[in-house]
Amino acid sequence: TKTIQDTLAEIIPERQAIAKELRSQHGSKVLGEVTVEQVFGGMRGIKAMLWEPSVLDSEEGIRFWGRTIPECQEVLPTAPGGKEMLPEAMFWYLLTGKVPTAEETVQFQNELVKRSVLPSHIESTLDALPKTLHPMTQFVIGVAALNHDSKFAAQYKAGMKKADYWVPTLEDSLDCVAKSFTIASRIYRNTYLGGAKDMPALQMDKDLSFNFANQIGFGDSEGFVDLIRLYNALHTDHEGGNVSAHTAHLVGSALSDPFLSYSAALAGLAGPLHGLANQEVLRFILDMVKEIGEGASNEKIVEFIWSTLKKGQVIPGYGHAVLRKPDPRFMALQQFGESRPEVAADPVFGYVNALYKTAPAVLTEHGKTKNPFPNVDAASGSLLYHYGLKNFDFYTVTFGTSRSMGALSQVVWDRALGLPLERPKSLSMGAINKLIGSP
Ligand code: FCX
Image (cartoon, rainbow, N blue to C red; front, top):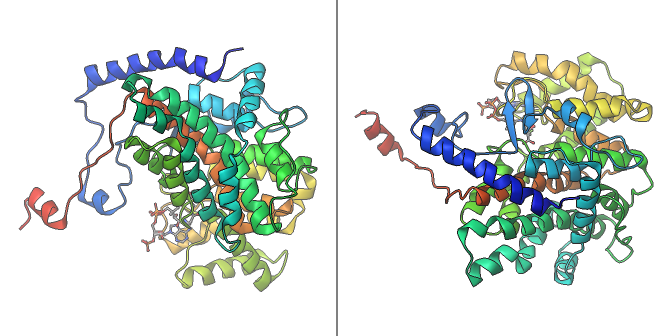
């Protein structure tokens, strides 16, 4: 069975040749134009970044190396006894563009779990943080501190050829993904369970999601473990322009190591318009239950949505900067819930469905958002809540363990393809006026 290192060493020259051909044969072709509105409008739609693992289509949603979510669910290996695709298999696929065999998946899983052991200085750093510090801030600190043992940083300092950059970048990225899971479980225990001293040991023959679930106290729940697998596989990557992915790519372009790059990405994921939205959705649903009760009519739900909009607040979990249809990641999570009778009967999950039936029409009538449909965050929190993970300040941390796999896969490709420092041009309003010839 080939290792990830050997597999990538084989694939990289092929894709370097494609990149060379694209640049030399088509380097001056035009991909689009940039308008003044786009400069003010958060750069929406500007095609200006290379991103290999996934491409997002506004109508059909994400494709990972060309495959849709259902197609990935069809081909990616599952855990023994589990029904959901393994995030480890998805990570291999994101890195290589090739579906791993069952043997490659097991070997890769074992390698990652071995790497997930934390150095003692990370444990003591996390243990020293106040329990009142938001779990995402704790996550940022833990991942940044992994830079202490960065192979990329050490080899760069010692003097390394550019052609070799991807090798220690891959090593650090594997470490960063693996250790993110154990950092996450330690944060959970410290914040909600009074400390990490009773944390179960890692089970080296099990997958990352099982170990994470087990370490935070949910190892006995088959449904929760499989949900965590699906959750982690689905949130990995959503092309390059979203805040977390773009940040990892940008910071990595300065040759900051993968730990620093991903720590910065996590700081972006912690914003309420991005990853924090999944905790906001739960807060929204629980506020709604408090106000209108369980199993309320659609009319009452519509009233509650309007009252939120009239306060000038957003409906969390709805809208998207790129998507213009319901998010297929939302659909996959909803299907997970629907296929399990005890989840389907849960009133909080019921509200996710009720919102899906009512919110798009209200948002359309409201007339502001370009996309009135649910994004992934509309469903994810309710499933965690159902299984008993009720500390919703923690939800974005599970998003963070997953996103590391997509963002860092591209960071490996950034170094393999020799991409340079990212440095777009900015303009002042005076400079814009000058450029467009306006007085
Ligand atoms: N509820 C109410 N108003 C909304 C809205 C929503 N769910 N979504 C967008 N709007 C409003 C915007 O606030 C904006 O109003 P403004 O003109 O007064 O500033 C207007 O509609 C146009 O926004 P639009 O172009 O459709 O959306 P953007 O690309 O600017 O922003 C996000 C996209 C996702 C940030 C936006 O839809 C939003 O705030 N949604 C709620 C938060 C959320 O769910 N975020 C998670 C997104 C994602 F899946 C993730 O990263 O995890």
